[in-house]
Length: 370
Image (cartoon, helix red, strand yellow):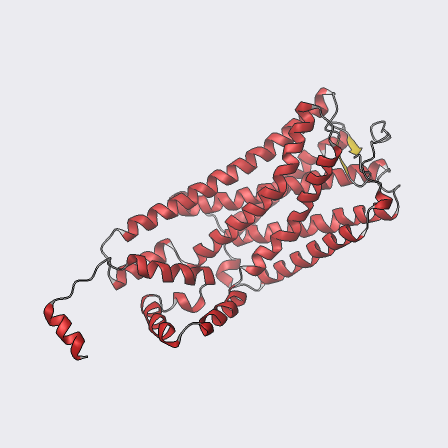
């Protein structure tokens, strides 16, 4: 309680800060995640039943809950600066920021681990029975373990403190008390391990896919083998999953890294920089706004319209000659595939065909006659 009553070093009074920014962030996060959940819910049955898209939906629900629970407290504090001075409200907001920040990183790590097992360790993937039910149980375990871990400050492991801008509460990361400093360090270490693990798994999966594709290109090519190998190694679903994973990981890690850095800076350097702390939490708050638009913009229907516009600007001759060739190699894949898969298919048709074609004199004469 004494920590909450400590007089903060004001950086920017809340009365001088417009309330439009938190309202805009709240509306953007809530609406975007609602749309993303609807988009994921109406996707095809095989996608909804997969472990990966169950984790993606779990991340969208997590972002929505975090926005709907944390943002109203911030908006209420802009209207009445005494809201966060209540110790229970301050502790609750600190818990929310701790929980949803760590949970988002954990789900992204789980998504990367799922892709790694599916592509690099398929036998283990099948043996463990990684499916929708498995992903749901894993999400529940993440929520339960993180609730317990993030409740520790509320039971005396660390203190919650109204930060210097008087607009948000977080753990007292400048304290000299051993238990509180140990908790701050532990939170930073866990977050850092999740970030590094996600990066390593994404690099491993990308490297494995590139290596398999390189080996595929070097093999003798026939129409049947091209189609079979493409289905096995670079199907439409795999391509879309990797696109969603890479872009979501980039956004989550970029938004979470500044706050993790500030945790270590405040814990070990003991150098108080309120402006940097405020900037870090604001960057982290942008994450729930950006995440859902990755799922929305990577939908097949939107890019199909863009692809049709690009095809209309191309010449009739090039479009008529390239479309039958793509359909010849991938008739059913091109029908329902995502735009990224279509681009990948077009590129692979060129790279997997023989590099040189030799014509005999007889072939040349027949071509001239035609």
